[in-house]
View (tube, rainbow, N blue to C red):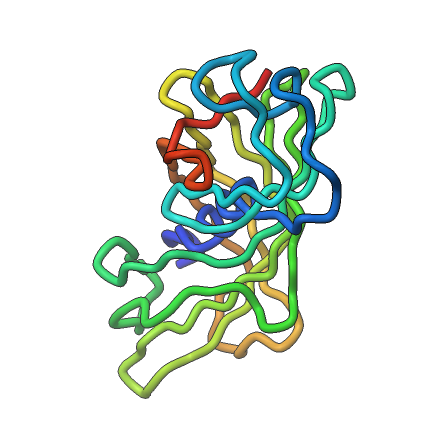
Length: 194
């Protein structure tokens, strides 16, 4: 079966929105692509930790007029009970995480309220013969909404990457919604796109 739940990629993408590397000075109090509290509120600062079932930090948050902000993924929160696989022969989803030595960057585009990211995610599936490691990737895009401060992926396409087991399906789709996206550096306030 090609259809399966690949929540891990959605998580990766969401964490990308939520991750960053402090590399630039803090911005003015308002006017960035990403703000907390409300649209047009206080800026999300470079380096702020953002979460929504994922973790990361803001990488860049220029003035909203530039139209784009970037985030770097730092981790994926994983709860085995929240993930399932419909792949024949699998018994469980053992673990989900970013492929070692990768730091995917997500781009938030104001005009479309979209987040785009290209992660490589490692998925370990339990099978009747032992665990199988699969690597999935590809550019995926999710819709951001200021209502509920959310990020939603719907039927996002993924493909296996070099190094995957021959037992891993060649492609898959995932659907997931992450909310609320919070800036934990600023008192866990919801994050908005301006």
